[in-house]
Length: 518
Image (cartoon, rainbow, N blue to C red; front, side):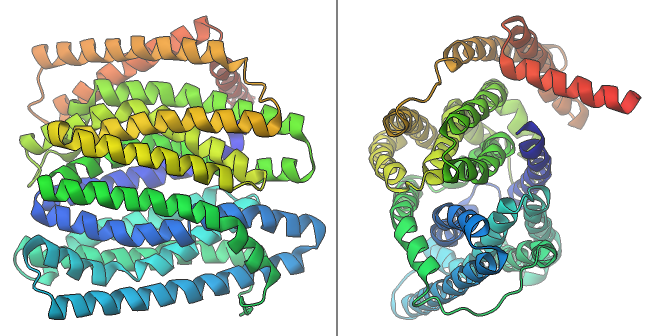
């Protein structure tokens, strides 16, 4: 588990760092003003359909079937099933894109829209075809994960980020004068990036034996089964995206800079979430699916427990550091160009409120994979709908007084409810979870994380008082010196408390180093 998810974690870390470089370039280029708000809202919408048809619902429904086809009917039928699903995806995505682009064109032609709303719609019209490209990339990633490839698919996202960063410097300046014109260079870059991400995975698909052949999806048994299983998940994902659109829309009307400030905070939180949470969840889905297909439920519970144990160990310290060092981190990464000190304060406030939810967000992803592996997409969907309703209520209540911080608090609270309900439902489904051994681990890691947060805060305060943050070197020191001290304190406490993950990771590192010495 550590080796497979660790290899993918390294690839994901590379991708996330490039994603961070992309956000740094975006922040320098457009800051947190009205143009940034329009671009962020426009990019949100194709991502809605990407999650509906590519990531999440479709892959969660298809990968267990794909694995079962491999075990029971052989590779020929397995690849035929993949071709049928991809053919159906192409039809669905192309239809949605055509209708959306026609609708936007008519809206712009016959409705009196201006300002930020008009710019958002124009950008959306450019970026909507990205949906098909990124859906195909997501399906390719799921297939390669199921075939035991984790590093190459995760590296595909690096191509996406490289192209998007390049678009800031190579395309945007050629679009004319003024930020409202140059922003279209970023929209074109999004399309090129989608092509690059899908194309990067194609050679690995070919080596595995995949050859695309049109297979009519209309009467295909696999497509019908995938649709039947993905509908509940699609409803849950749709509810999530609709929830985001409503809350962001309200924030857009209250104060437009709320959206980019909150978005930058989300991107920062996605770095540890992607490296530790998503990487582990991606490993767990095919692994748990295989155990469920073979009815090995004791091993299923043990694998899930071990995965949660490693996840908690990594994410507790990450959450503590994000909260304690929010302002120094954002100042180091983003404060240049149009992104000024005021933007730093706004984004830091969002991150402080969002950071405590990191552990819950990652646990939700992994518990949902356990249900998907068991062939149950309805239960996570129902729980998701309940928690999304709570999130919407919390957000509408808190946006007014706390602005972008209100969005962070709402997400954190609803994620905590989601974890509780998923654990309760999974315990009822499996009879027992055998998670009692995790309780002392959770309490121990929580105490270690609080101590690490205090150490990071005190060290940051001392650095600011004695040295300041007047140049790049001192800004780096204000982040990394407290971070190193806090992480060392966390590890020492974890080892002293005999936290299993700390001991296992240390043993793995020693074996690796020992092997190299020999």
